[in-house]
Image (cartoon, rainbow over all chains, first blue to last red; front, side, top):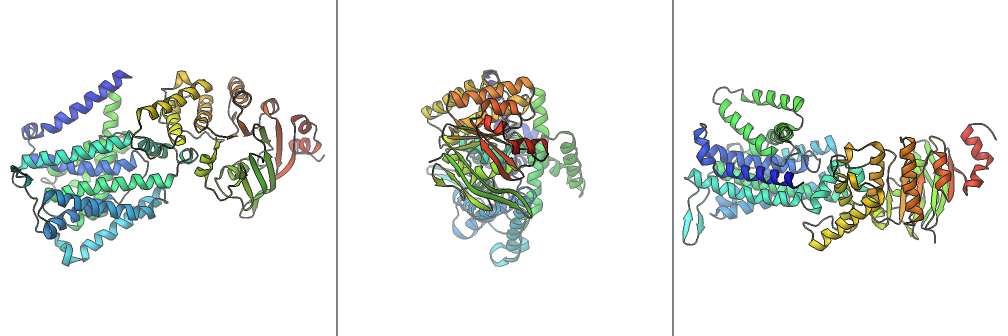
Length: 317
Length: 249
């Protein structure tokens, strides 16, 4: 038992050391720091999807909606309201999270395929709103111009706009907060009720659990995480276009989560890393890069249903 | 006041009448067996009591309260716990985790982001007690899904016990078990009834088990209550014999 927890601690320490040293080892492998920043942000979004899929047993195919609302919320704050990076993030998180909470109330009674379908439908609604409401959102051209602002700390400030490395560490800091909160929730009594619902909804109900309420809370939390990732994504690009709201983006999150391993906490981050790196590399070679990711996805699902991290985890133990 | 009372309950599924005008009273401390041929409506009747669905007509009362419209999860909190004919557990969690979830819900901690040390200790204590009571201590760390069928059935009963129920509803506790397992679970149910004075209603096919355990027996046949009484009365009842042998009395 203590050997197992020591091993787990070691793995977590290794992950954080790896993440902290990205600006050192990334260029050696031919990558660049901004690529790692994207991995963190999309990884966080995939982890938010997995918070539902892997730990509550509920598949959302519309998380791009909350992610995209987070991005637009962040961009709109910077463009129209206040030139402050933290405030912009808060704006994005609130927009996506609160919308998710409201619409989630209509979704949580559905199960399985129906749940997935309704999440897609709600997601597409926001896509078309962003597409059509040009005066506010810039429509098809996307929301611009806005730029992430330096972080002010009284005596000094950090330039995260032109300094890639500083921005990476800022995003890593934001990522760490979200991941800590997520891990904390999953280890709480509430988190265990999520596992209970994933494992056996009927048993959960007959232990006295109001299952719909708990799914709604898990869904809402997940939307806040997704919106947070979306807000960071707007900062990464200094731009938000309707595609961040599109269901294909939702699909990408699900692919990342499943490819990386949906029963493992860190799996979606690995999935996102693979997705982003492959996309970056392949798209410079061919416009049909998605077909390669598609093939890889099919192979993983067919032969490693627990995802890449599931396989590694089994090898280690 | 009876602990559980069902008044003139009927349940229709379209044209099929699964339960027809059945009434039942169970007193506190009693062990009641519900028996009947396959398709008699026993599990449907259980589902009415536990709130999986509502009766088409009639009402269900628990401790003098009309619970007919009370949803299943709230009936659990009122003190009704049940098991299922096909074991319902959390297969990919350990036995201890399975019980811990039940204990945490029973103690009202289900929405908590964390527990105080004393609260966590209380949960651990009640889990340990139930592990000891059900003889699952040596398997506490194993995944429930990997246990033998008989142990899974016991684990499901153990989960129900974490809820500190005042009424325990067991749907065929010996289903699919060999002789040894049947013996062990019968002894467990017997101990729960005699030593821990749980009120228990169980559905059972194995007549040895029924006649060994039950204070009273209710016989369902084709959705109606055919007979009710002490085991020796039921054994001597001509209509019951006919229903089981499939012949006219």
